[in-house]
Amino acid sequence: MAFIPRIFTPGRDHFFLLGPRGTGETLWSTQHYPRALRIDLLDPETLRRLSARPARLTELVDGNRDKPQVIIDEVQSCRPCWRWYTC
Image 1 (cartoon, rainbow, N blue to C red):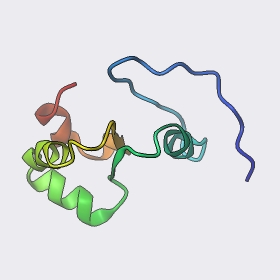
Image 2: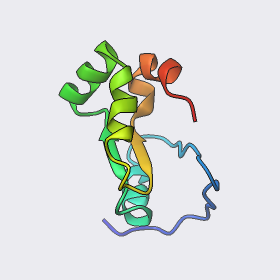
Image 3: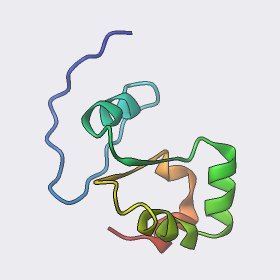
Image 4: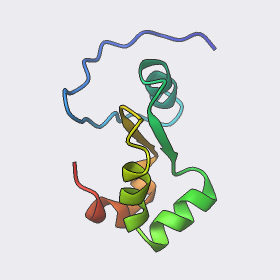
């Protein structure tokens, strides 16, 4: 599949990249932030661990200080994480 460039300027500190499934949000973030810490909530084990104990999100971020950005893919899947980690 060909990559279609998007007109989008990311926020300076943090932002949400939203769109319908299959429109390239993950591909865009992978291309623009190749060194980022990626947390994929489509992975059932990752989702289960974070849903059961949202504090693990902070532990993941704190344990990967060498990563310049944090990308949480499918963040809507883990409602308990919304309350735990704030931007």
